[in-house]
Image 1: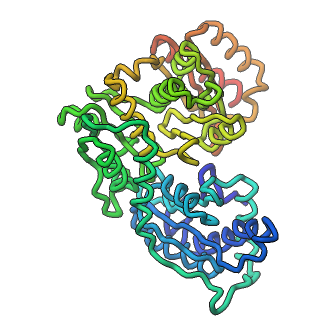
Image 2 (image 1 turned 180 degrees about the vertical axis):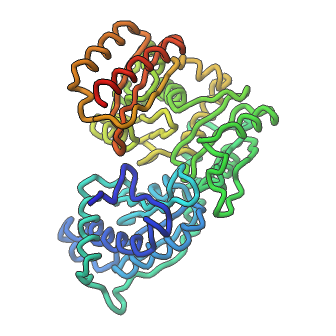
Image 3 (image 1 turned 135 degrees about the vertical axis):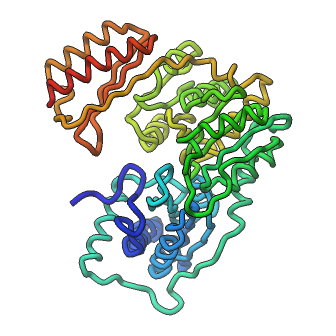
Length: 459
């Protein structure tokens, strides 16, 4: 039986794989698992007669309306009081879960996925993502009761109460502006909200911080989220930045846990470059703990070379912001992220926060009086070629002698200005071949040769 929880919560096509019944059942199970820890935490907690509290938010997808209703119903039926914060970014729900002392948080979003999809993401007390063990317990409990076992339900005054928590918007925006090292006065910034969860939050936060704000992608209607806009479609942002003469532009995804940028000339500034700019700013301020930044194996080699040159250590993880976060917590580091724009500033957020990332990037531009292009120029993005080789035995990537020899030969050929990475897909029978080199044609040639070997050796 396939696991319900993926790398970032439970996702599926709303009203098909992700139904109201599933949302309700998972929420009841999550309420039992995530609030039982409170009851067993201490003698004082065991005597606490107040009901547990949950924060529930969503992105603007039309399906989020009925899924929110199902989640709220499930939580309240399990004896949990619900603070419904409405349309807010994923990191806002995480922040409010922590700042309000809630026992859990729930976010309904499928991030950058198309509108028909949706997802359910749970946060534990403090606004932290769930460990695999907690997800497994929630799923096991859900399946047990979906099979027919009745829930033990509170009655009368024991059922949860539901209220809208409209203060969440202002609380979160105030937090974002309050942690900035300096104001953004004098900067003109274009914001692409992806018609998503940051459509109100991001423009408001930038404006309160002093920026002159121009907006696109900030008119969600429930159907247009991520539709040819946001961090996966930067052409509209490029055009708007150049047309308006802005200093920079920032683009979010549907749930606003990521941020990409463009400079004044409309050139993309990706997650690696943003990480580089913020790492040096934090190092200069003495805030980059252990002078180390965390990034995934897919980060550009140019990022690694730039950090080495600037005296910053690089810790690498598997692909996925959850692995970045795990390494940050384990190593006591303060900054990490992905090329896709998931950037985690652990002193101010428990997860990737696209609005905070954009604000901090703009703050660095304002503080240094240097253009974003100049700041991002600290690293040179080496050409990167990715080839997916399908219908192969991905389990033999590290054991097939012909492939091991071919990779070693390619690495010798590329030397210190190139890199090879073979990564089995986590969900499909394919192997991803990634090659970086100083020259794009060289990278393509090496990637093509290796892809042929993968097909021959593993097919």
